[in-house]
Length: 157
Image (cartoon, rainbow, N blue to C red; front, side, top):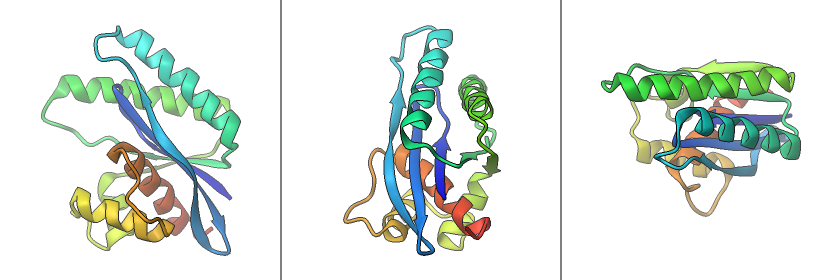
């Protein structure tokens, strides 16, 4: 089974694709969809839409695991992240991918055993679970991989 993990964002949207081989997650692809900061939001969302379609076409995942939003202090940022997340959900639906949503605390707890783990702990656990020599960069790609790994744990694939 191939799992596409998404860490939604407007400026940087992380993605990571893993495959479960012999019960263990193996990284196939990871990176970010970056959009220029001063580009109008509709154009940024279109970039995310087109790029995610291309990632799905290339990597052929079976499911999508996406991080749920948590409310931030900056409501403007929260709204644009929600819009980017909506685009990701739309693309998955159009590509007929089953969608699984996990809160940040669920992801942290599944990865580290502690729902309030810090970013460094999370990144190290992603590295360890995938048997990598170094932590995936940038952070958004590592976060997306964590969502995919979480799905593999919680769905028991």
